[in-house]
Image (cartoon, rainbow, N blue to C red):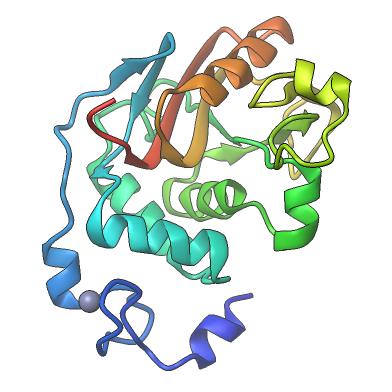
Length: 218
Ligand SMILES: [Zn+2]
């Protein structure tokens, strides 16, 4: 799965200098990651926790995963999330939440070949033992303004988000009761709020969110 990454020369995605194999960042860039306080914050009504500020090497890592095909970076992000999450969020003390990746617009999924949020969620599921349900879909919006028809523009910048009838990769029937949404970066939380609304409408009872990085100062 990570063949391309494993064969690539081990260079740091932050500074381009040498990095250890399977480490997407060199020691210096890892050391300059801006860690956030442990507590979740509320964004657009969703409780969101992220271990890193979206700046410097954390931003480089997100961009590498999103735009440069560095799928191996997802596991490094998941490692940071799993190691630093507040108690109860990503462990199964309370019966365990189900991880649900924020969906990518189908057009972007086609051009990118994978959903970066789903890559992180998969790595996080492997590390935490939590269930994964890729049970949200996005339509309309989400893509560039060019070529959007009127219905898509009405759906807003996040597009319309809904639960899908038969979740991929899911052993869970219907919407899971307790959900932790997974995304790479969170800014306003608008997309997370749309995901949460869709899940609550489908029967979920509790929907929180984690992201690798959070944009500060907005
Ligand atoms: Zn570096």
